[in-house]
Amino acid sequence: MVFIVTGFFQINSQNTLANKISRAFDIDPDFWDPVTGAKRNGPIMLFASNLQVTVMDKPNDYSEAKIKSIVQRYKKESKKINIHRKNKNINKQTLIYILSESFSNPSRVPNMSVNKNPIQNILTTKQSSTSGLMLSSGYGGGTANMEYMTDTSLNLPFFASSLTVPFTQLVPNQDYVPSSTFFNVGTQFTVIQVVFTDGHRFIKNLVFKRSKILRAQEKIN
Image (cartoon, rainbow, N blue to C red; front, side, top):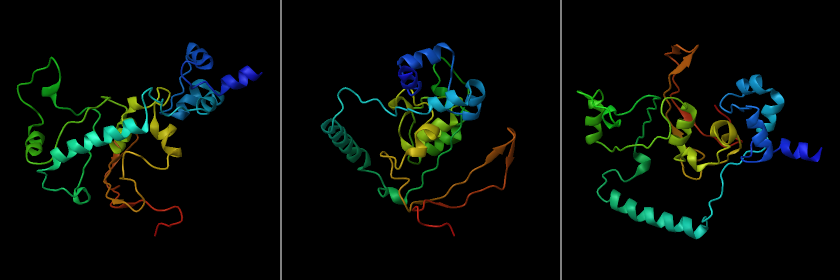
């Protein structure tokens, strides 16, 4: 009985006996959609899969001194990059995210040639403004994970393999994001969003003009 109860808590812990047995029976927790996971595996298995979630495995050479050395290295690099930057106050800059599951520069796709680049206007705009490339660990799907990685600058491979959907496994219990000050209390930002419904229709007039992160005791007026 002790073994069964202990194993029950380790279903989502990689390489444990309970995890290997659950995989052998093709039990997939479906963290991206708990309803689907409950229908496929039953509510008990879904509950067990969420009992113990390892957020991040500690690297062998991890230490405070190591992190400080990395910080200093990139501080030096940032000074070189920003020395000729016109808008040095990041608080006065506007950053716009346009996330698309299938958008990319086709001219950068290996073993593919195009006679005309369909995003030439975007490339022209990049030349006259602050721009760059983003290394994406996903393409064609995984929208929620792409949003999390973009907002926090934390790449999914940084986390333990048992954490597959941060928005459902991590964010509900996360007080702050160490890599970003974007979500500091009192931060104000504008959100414009097109919300799709029924898979193919969208609400054109549903626009969030302003959003404010409040302290727990504050009320929205």
